[in-house]
Image: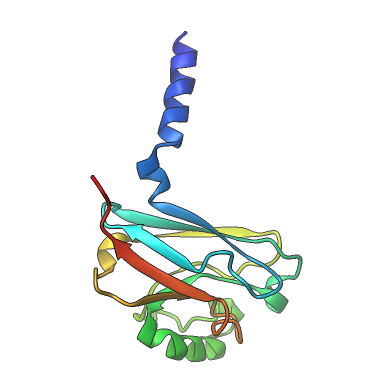
Length: 151
């Protein structure tokens, strides 16, 4: 009976809406596409997690993808600076303070994640997420907004 209660408690905990709202699964593919174009981050979350998968078959050096979050005004310059940084730095200039959060570059069949503090976001901020692999940032992108949630 105790085992059943523990299992039921774990299932309830794992499916809690509050927990699910503080993370999102995103997939990138060999056609240079994310399956998500917009993300809403609840203000009630202390942290937010991006779980990135690459459903394609091509390797990270050919068709790698990462997930990068920045203010929209900085995206082009971050991407341009990242090309010079190379794959060994995930196509991001090391210690670039314009980058709010990012994952590593992954290839087909791989997964990665990043968790960042929601306190880094402003309610009126204009944020874009994108892939910084050379040539991808102009098509592999979307918006991220901080939103008030119903209590």
